[in-house]
Amino acid sequence: MKRSLVAAVLILTPVFAAEGPEYSKRIQEASTVLTEIMGAPDQGVPSELLEKAQCIGVIPDLKRVGFVVGAKFGKGVISCRTATGWSGPSTIRVEGGNIGLQIGAGETDVVFVVMNSRGMDKLMKDKFTIGGDASAMAGPVGRSAEAKTDALMHAEIVSYSRSRGVFAGVSLEGATLRADNEDNTKLYGRTLTQEQILHGTVPPPPDAKPFLDAINRFAPAHKEH
Image (cartoon, rainbow, N blue to C red; front, side, top):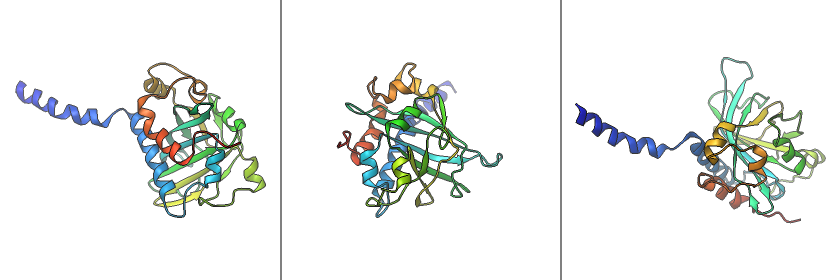
């Protein structure tokens, strides 16, 4: 009996180890979402927005909480530009908000782009409300879409969703965003503030590589001024 139990443990342990921690899977899922969205024909975030982006965030599988009207919940990651390239990712939580009818059944992937330093500064708060503390709007779709409207020029955050293969601009109005401090501690091996992470004061951990590779592919690390 003991030999059978030991054998079962030896067989199952590599499977569990291969899955990896939750925060690592979240980073991998975020990189996959960004790559798939930007790789879809005639879709994706316009290249001129990514060239100007101060930060890029991805929330894979945003869910509706069925027993609470209008409640939504998701975990994601975000990285910001620094003087030396993209920062290591900070793990984040997004809750609530009016994210449209796409989140009716199943799950929705969300990508949002922080357009300027004002928007980036809002990310440094323990918690902030999109549309309240930071101005936001649904983003234009298509890699060559015109992105020069007055509203867009003044928006601090533009956002998109993908549900059942449909990609569109979507408003995150009313959603709250905060750092997932518990997962950030696990990811970096010590307690850090979101400001320390996103300002690039700590090197990216190895688990961050898939997400940073995806961002650098579609948004070169250094902006043209």
